Image 1 (cartoon, rainbow over the protein chains, first blue to last red):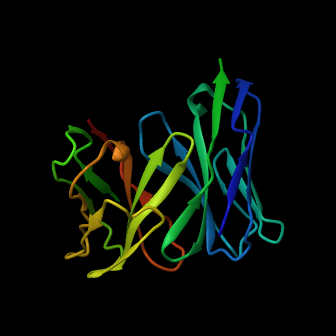
Image 2 (cartoon, rainbow over the protein chains, first blue to last red):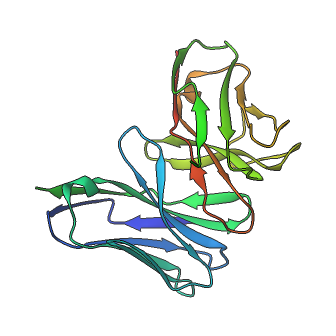
Length: 111
Length: 112
């Protein structure tokens, strides 16, 4: 069974600092890995999707890396802003029919 | 605009009163799924569907039913809701072969 772990569970940084969020998974046989953002009481917004054959994906201030062999992914958010405050979820897709989620990292960016 | 639409968004109901949460997507996706999110337990899959008339159980299917009569719709049915089904529910959809998964806004369900 795929286990997904996100560390740390919570993170508080001053505005402008770079954010580094970690995700680890136990089974390297995956289709892809997806990072989501969730605001309190809201749905999940997809941030980045990394296919199993890729090493990284970038979108604006966001960059996600994938090391499938070691079962790790890292989400970098450059020059954080208060609007980046949210919970960030990592999800691994081991097959066509499900996602396995981590518990998330709750980020607070202090103005 | 790509959308997964769930209704109702908020519902308080009583134990045993049947309810249906609807889910509709406008992207012609084959895959649809329901998840529930609970504090400390994260997101867990309830049921999924790979296409019309093809459904299967996820990790926590007890107490739920689904149907997929049309490609765009995937309703979640609680035949006899109980308080332990109080949760935040999400519908999701995607194409096959590792495409991005899109989520609805969520449905807050309280069973008293």
